[in-house]
Image 1: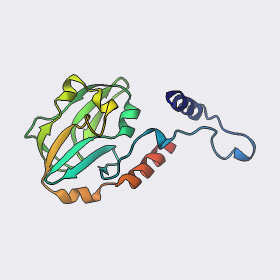
Image 2: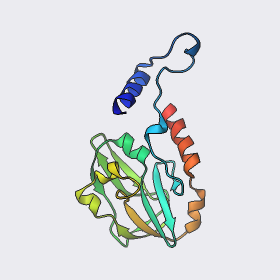
Image 3: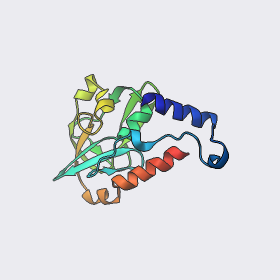
Image 4: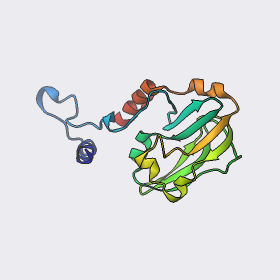
Length: 164
């Protein structure tokens, strides 16, 4: 599977395309089938997910995001009690490729931080939706979640983004 993704990426970078009747479409494309998008979660266009249960919103980065980042080697997360704002950075993820901000999908107070990520940041790669969650927030404005993407819209967003 990794070899297929590498081949697709290489073919796209080299602009290798098919011949004959298929010339309009590339011979290889990066496929979204390699990333998991879960129903029941909300997503941001910057690749964060949120699971809202009662008065708690659990936040992390998507499988799509961790796949593009590569191996995560360090996490910077806020302290419990910190205030976060929708669309604003609350921390960052450092991978072997880059360092990226992580934005909060909802405003509120951080009520729990996943301290396991300090010692094992690779949980974001191996289990982005379960063990790799980052923070839990008590939303101050839960209606902000209504403006986020559902699984189908997020999948479409990723497909369009990867096509460019």
